[in-house]
Structures are given as structure tokens and as C-alpha cells.
Amino acid sequence: MTALITERDLRALNSLTKYPSIPTYHALDPKNGGLLEAPTDFGDGTVIATEKVDGTNSRIILLPDGTFLLGSREELLYAQGDLIGNPALGIVEQLKPVAKTMTAVENFNLIIVAYLELYGGKIGGQAKQYTSDPAAFGWRLFDVATFPQWPAQLEWQSQQIASWRDGGGQSFVGEDELAKFAVEAGLPVAPRLLDEFYADALPRSVGDMHSMLVDVLPETRVWLDDKAGGRPEGIVFRTPDRKVIAKARYQDYERTLKRRGGAR
Image 1: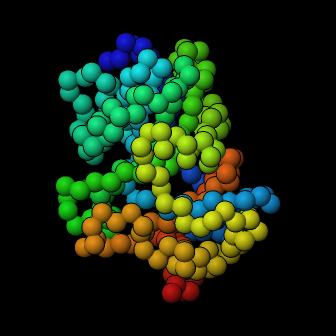
Image 2: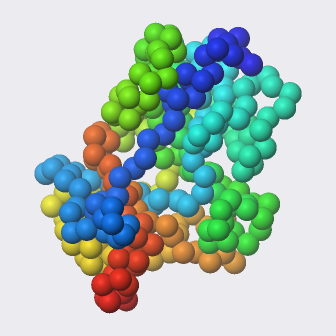
């Protein structure tokens, strides 16, 4: 357990720093899980496209006292100094050495959370798309959030924290700050697939978005060896300030087009 965070704080800290769900670019039909012809509105600014890696969502939580905690999307797994860590999905084993190199990152009395996708190994059914070696892992930074009001927030009740988080209360850094943090922390980022482009270039229809997936990301860009399958999960679109974010996954579009009789 770190000196700064008490056992009483852990439940609040876990909830405070959980990563929110990314909505689908085309809305999901609640009746059958297919996609509707209702795309996300990205306004009229620029958009950034990155590969969505299919692994397990992981957290490195940097505390103001220079210590860190590690977590999956749902739970905390390790605090610096613990003799035993939760072995779930290999997160602690793989990311503890990474986190130790990040403790020098200047945080200005903030709690900073780096969100990474840990992939490969035996993580999920798609691990074989990235590696043929069950002992090989990779990780990619895809978001960073800061928590300047953490002392007061750790005193909040669980319902208040959940409402704040689900209402978009977390403060994620923009693209430029993310890139700077990645360099300072020595972390590779999720691959950028295109130069910044304007939102009006995004496909409007389900069929056209499927075509964009095929054209822009025919295979993964985060191979761990050349014997892997190479099938990518999809693309995440975001504005540079991260005010709007959405995902387009191959499986959603293929399932929808197959149902419509138009799969290619």
C-alpha cells in the first residue's frame, strides 16, 4: 500500500479512475445489436484516427508522492510496495516494470492515469492476431487523464463518483499533451492511421464506414511477430481535444452487413 492512499481510499480511487466506455460510431440497435444509420456527430473540426487494439484495458495510476498503482478496467491489482499482486491477465507482471520507469513524470500534485491496452500473450480470443508466442506481450498508450481535485473526490460517496464519471467528469488530455506525455514516459502510443482530417470526410453510412476500415486498416500495425494472424479490431476516431470520441469495429460492421445481405 502506498503512503498517500489509505485502504479506505481504494474503492473511491478505483471508481474515480475507471475508463469510460467508448460509444460506437454508428449507433447500436437495442433490438438486435446491429448498427443503425446514425453516425456520431464530430462537428466541423479535425479528427484523428487510431488503431483500436484488442487486448485488455489497463491503468497505471501515478500518485503525487511518486508511487503508483496498477489496475485492470474494473479493479485495482497492485500498489507499489506490495509483496503480492493480483495476477489477472498478466497486467501486474507486464506493467510493473513499465510503471517503475514512469514515476519521475512531473505530476504537479495531480493524480495522473495512463490508460493502456495490454495485448498478445493469452489475452482473449484475439491474442493470436498479434503474436504466435503466448509469452509475448505488447502495450500501447491510448489515453491519459488528470485528477486535480482528487483529495476532495476521494471523500465522495460511491454514487456521486459514478455519476460524475459516467457524466463525462474525467479530464482527459488532448492530442498534443498525450504525445508529450508518451515521450516523457517512454510509452508507445496506439498507431495513428491518418493525418488529421476534417469531420466531413468521415463516412456517413454503415457500408461506407466498412469500406474505410478495409482501406485504412486492412491489417494490424502492432504485430509482435510475423506469424500472427494480423486481423485488426477497428479504429477509434477522436477530436484533438477528445471532446468527441467513437469506435468503429470490424465485427460490428460485418455482422450488420451480413444481416442485411450485403457483407463483402
